[in-house]
Image (tube, rainbow, N blue to C red; front, side, top):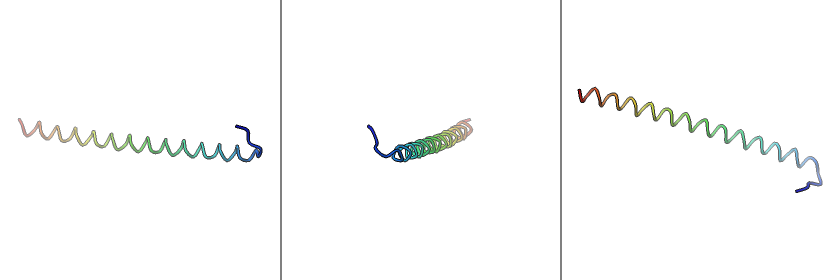
Length: 53
């Protein structure tokens, strides 16, 4: 798709970079949440093992 205004290309590139940054941030946030949830499950499992012994 050809743009008659070269500034439009820069704007599209900025939008693309912003979208990439947003996706990266979202992915990192999800990873942190998943890691914390896993740590909570491990702690719960350890407590249950101690109670069973």
